[in-house]
Length: 548
Image (cartoon, rainbow, N blue to C red):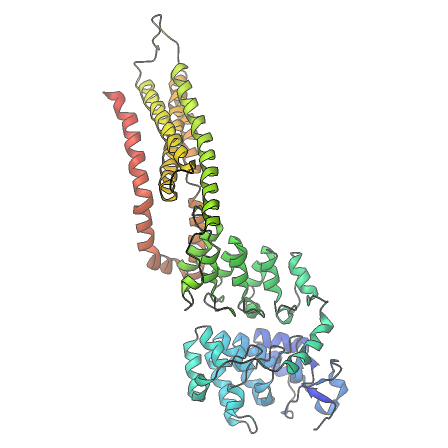
C-alpha cells in the first residue's frame, strides 16, 4: 500500500503479552497470541508528526506482530536478543519482513542475535532471508546500525567467532565493508518519537529511578535511553546505585542492558571502571553475560580505562584503581590493540615531581608520628617494669623467663621504631632523590610493621607476667585476645579475598586455581615469605634468648 504522508516506519505499541512471550521464550503463549493464518507482509511506519498509531488506526494491516516497544524493537528483535530459537522461527514464518525491521538504534534482529552470540538464531534468520521473496541476503546482512556497524562487526567486536564465520559464509563481501554513519534524517525521525517519553535532558522516568536507587522496574526498561544513549544500567552505574546494578545483573531477561553501548561506545562496565566503584565492578564482572573486552568509540576496553585510572607514583596497592585493574586482568580482560604509550603517559613533568614529593613528605610525617609514639612507649616501659623492686633496686621478677622475654621484645620494638623514624626522615627530605625515597618508604613501612607487632607481643608478655601468679588461665586468655590484633595488620588481604570471590563467581574454583596458582604462589614468595621469615627470626630471638 502506498502512502504519501509517511516517511518512516509506522509504530504500533506492542502487546504486553507478546513482550512477555518474546522475552521469556514462552512458546505456548506466543501460539495463543498469533492468528491461525499468516498475515500479510509487515510495514512498520511513523507519520510525520511522530504520533504512535494503534492497530485500530488501520484495521486492514492490524497484526499483533507489528507491535514494537518504546525502543522500536519488534518481537523478533527481543527473541533474537535472548536466543529463543523456536520463537524466532515462528515469528519469521508469520512476518518475514521483520527480518529487516529496524529499532531506534537502526538495528535489525540480526544485529541483536550476532551481538549476543546466538549462533543458531543467526543461522535461522539468514536462512529465512534466502527463502523470502523481496528480502535479499545482502539487504539483511549488510544493514548498518546507528554506529555504522553491520551484524558482522557486532559479532567480531564481542568475540563470537562462530557467528562471524556464519555471516561471512553467507556473504563473503561483508568483511570488506567499512563503517560509516547512517543519515541524520533517519535518526531525527526516531528522535521525534523518543522526545515524547523524555525530558529536555533525554532522561526518562526510569533513569531518574535509577539515580534515586529505586529498584522497581517495568517490562521494557531495556528500551529506554537518555540523550547520551544510556540505559537504566548505565545511569545506575553512574550514580553508584548498587541495588539497581544487583537487580539487573540478577535478571537474565535484562541481558541486553549489560553490554549496551551509549553514544560514546561505553558499556556499563566502562563507566563502572571509570568511576572506581569496586562493588559495582565486582557485580558486573561476576556476571558471565557481561563481556569484558568491548571497545568504546575511542578504541579503549575497560582494562585500558583501568590502567589509565591508576595513579602514577606512590600509591597503595589495594586502592580501588589497583583492585579494579587486578580484577579485570585476573578474569581474562584484554588490552586493546592501541599502543599503550598513547594511552598511558609515562613521562614525569615538573608538576608530577612536585606532587610526588608532597606525597612522600606527607607520608613521612604520618610515619614519624606513629614511630615516635612506639619509641616513647617502649622507652618508658624500661623505667616502669612490671612487678616490684628489691632493696638494691633490681626488679623482683628479673629472673623470670617471661620478664626476660618482655625486655627483649621491648628492646626490639624501640630499635625498629627508631630506625623507621630515621628512614622516614630521609623519605621526607626534598634533598633526597625520588628513587631513593621509594626505598626509604619501603624500609619505613617494614620496620613500622615489625615495631607494632613486637610492641603488642611485649604488652602481652607484661600482662601475663603480672596475672600469671594470680590466674594462669586468665593470663593466657588475655594474651590470646591481644594477639588477635595481628589479624588487623593483615587487613590488606581483605580486598584480595574479595578479588578471589569475584573470580570464583565468573570462572569457578577450577578456573580460579588453574589460571592464578602460579601468580598467587609467586606473589606469596615475593611479598609474604620474606616478611614471615623476618618476623619468625625476631620472635625466635624473643623466646630463645631468655634461655641463655
